Image: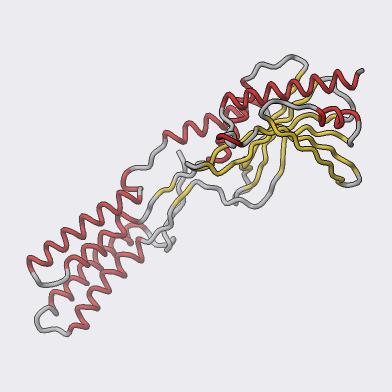
Length: 309
């Protein structure tokens, strides 16, 4: 059960007091409007309507509640386990089944407000006395439009995790080690919040200048929304044997991009293997992720053999 904090703008006001203000404001405002209908000044009628509005909206005014964490800007990559990835994926599946009650949804509130407005207009035109439509609208507006719940789902992280899961579905030899990594932030309460994930694939026995292959997932803009794009990055210490060998490898329908950079006095060589983006290739589906696994295992086996010889 998720604990929803007090969402009201005026937090210290007891709930029963809010209801009393709402009801008494409606009564006082309507009485003033009705009593000044024939002989009273028009300003008094306006003042009565103002009381209805203020007494209705102010005590019941709320913020939209959401489970989205307020990130603090930390970005720490930490090693995880496949069980942790599975647990996160299961949480996503469970969140998908959650639905707020009707009265906590904005669309329901707008529908009820619209019905109240129509009823008010009918009464107003039939009686031709006080503006019931406006009073009905103002009275019903906070009841059904405030205290709304917006369930947040980390859609991009979900796409990343499912792509990595497809990669892990491919059977690998006992000589290959796969370590998941999670990028963690913190929320306002100090709890760790996962934001992204990647895999480090490496041979259990590898050349000294080879770190391994990082499997990463970017999020592309597709014609129907965001889509995942998985690719492999071979990471080497320096630009010698392992880097030179991997740079010569080519695979059908894959682009190869090589680069090197210096960081804190160390030179790192990288070789990126990414699926050709033509003809819908900007979106890596389950079969594409499994092909990327095949490619990664072949690269690692190839470089290990080449450096030995």
